[in-house]
Image (cartoon, rainbow, N blue to C red; front, side):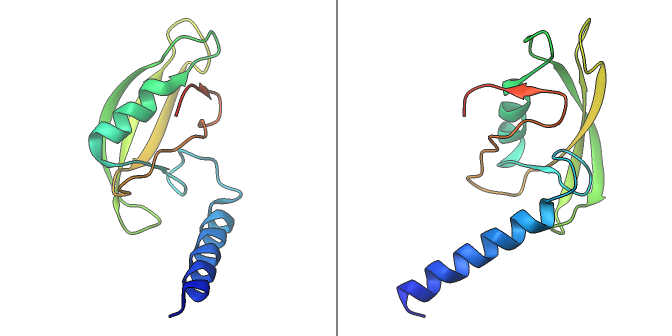
Length: 113
């Protein structure tokens, strides 16, 4: 494949992923947060901020079977003591090497990359 064809294929694949994720909230079972292994999951969760700008407390609940990409997804219980959102279950897919999510799940803000 010529370089222009490769670029086009990458752009089309990226657009399809964006369309597939549209309409389902980030962090849901249908649109888990993508990360690189457990350290990437923890790094993402550590960058979230509650309504009062404090970092949330989080605990891994366990594995929840296959996600939309066919990877096993994990669930994290995320709590904002004394703030909103009080308690949220965030689904994550750790099998996305090199990916660093820059968007916050609904109800939170995010700091840094």
